[in-house]
Length: 149
Image 1 (cartoon, helix red, strand yellow):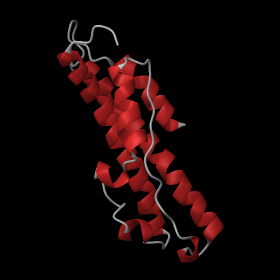
Image 2 (cartoon, one colour; image 1 turned 180 degrees about the vertical axis):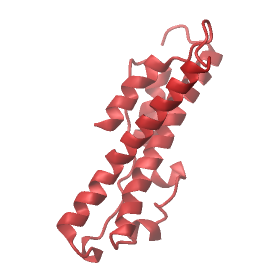
Image 3 (cartoon, one colour; image 1 turned 90 degrees about the vertical axis):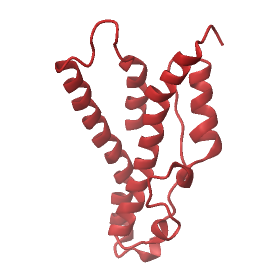
Image 4 (tube, one colour; image 1 turned 30 degrees about the vertical axis):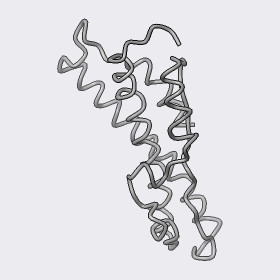
């Protein structure tokens, strides 16, 4: 496990796990939102049109695996959430609508990556990454790239 300072561990959780948890919720909520837009309210009825991480959480994929990766200082981590249920019978054009529902999650990841890039660029321009106080952005980037896939 190495020599991991508790303060450093907490900072890794806030820099890596909290954005990861937010992106998982945003991803799954995007699927539920698009399904609702296309006529299926199953996700909404089941409470999945929410940013509450416990609604989307899979214990192993959302908490145990990612936090273990941080604790054991793995070079990158990944995880998953419970998929949003969709009832194709509620869709007017099932084949086309399922395409849009499926693409909504990865599109939300891309949107979050673009927003994060602007935030990092802004922080860099306005002195957020001063010498000696640099955020460990390179540790988080592999996770961001993997979330796009």
